[in-house]
Length: 354
Image 1 (cartoon, rainbow, N blue to C red):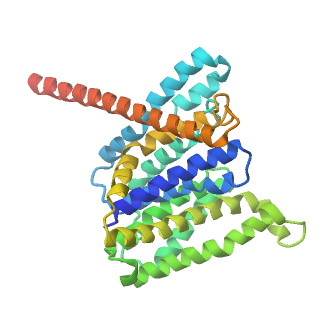
Image 2 (image 1 turned 30 degrees about the vertical axis):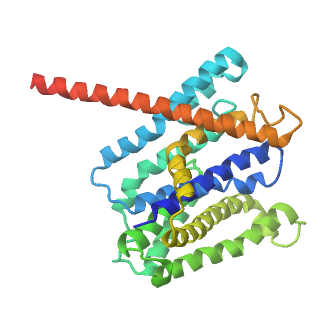
Image 3 (image 1 turned 135 degrees about the vertical axis):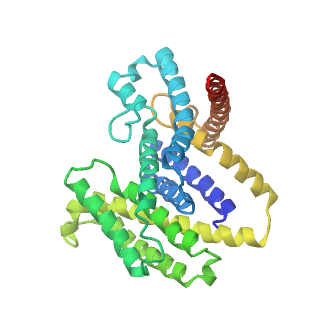
């Protein structure tokens, strides 16, 4: 079984990377496009978590997962819409509103100021395909290591070809991060019962392969993006954006695994009570802070330049993001409790009629 504390620690770091990415973006810093690898870490982590579980009832599983995502999303969206109606009607457009209401912001242009919510469209799509990934489970021990790897590569390649042919209009590297995470943990944690990196030769070989691919491709992507002079590797330039996206996926996977083994070793040796409190807080509020944070950093209501003191501005942003995240979580809990009570009353009334 995976180390839940290690995963929770990575979740907090990934959230911090995304917030930092948006701050750097507001400052127009190139580093923003490297810190946004936190998104790929999140996607890989989601696949990683579900690869260790078995879905008995796909409909119930999907309903439960979607509810956890969209209830706080719609609460936040409603607050944003009301806020815009009062303070920024210029930011409300019919197309943007419909895009966000229909959860299509990952495939079109939603409302300004909350562009980061494209992630919601992608994670919901990943949840929908999870029962299919389980059904075509080529990570099982019936497949040798090479058959498993080849099938995974062929699946990702087939999806990428369909995307290039405009059959499916989604970012395959992002979906790929989830798929790789799912089958990685399925193979090494669900079937092989991971007991630690030192004891698992199969795990070590997989990790070395991923790390090697990341180390080899990252300098190439950096060269094509920042130092290309029109000569070396010119044949790759038409594919630069795609290479950058797939390298981001590899980088996200590599960072997740490196951090996982570090934290797994750290927490196995000693208990850190202050860290435990931070981790529990992160598990409870990280998604809600993710939903609310960007509006304070980018766009019309940015607090990044409210004073000349950058440290003070960033501190205010973090406090606002945390406070609104906590409030959103409380509202979400209230709505979910009301829905649960309504569901119980409906079931009780149905039983009486019967």
